[in-house]
Length: 129
Image (cartoon, rainbow, N blue to C red; front, side, top):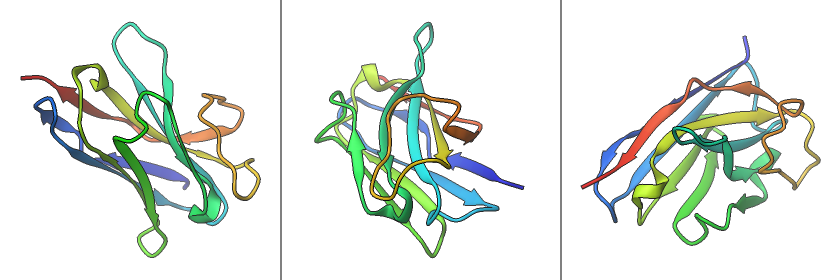
């Protein structure tokens, strides 16, 4: 069974940090790019960051550049999203998803369900004082 499980969400004060984890099972990160998306209440789901299959390349939305860092651990088959300098506008449910169709060294922040076909259940991140 192909599965992604997110963890690490929670409540944090503005300026604080969280690290989200996305554990993959049933497939390896060598063959799928992984994207992190988020959805705030009343808003569309948006791409935050992604990492290419083989963990060689990354991309970030402008709103998180310089604050968020995506990385992966092949041995644990897990992708992480380190979030620093959190702002109230970062509050959302965060999802990771796997893209089977990406070319090596590339990934997309576009929420294309024809490509991102495996999704986790989501983890809530709330930034508030």
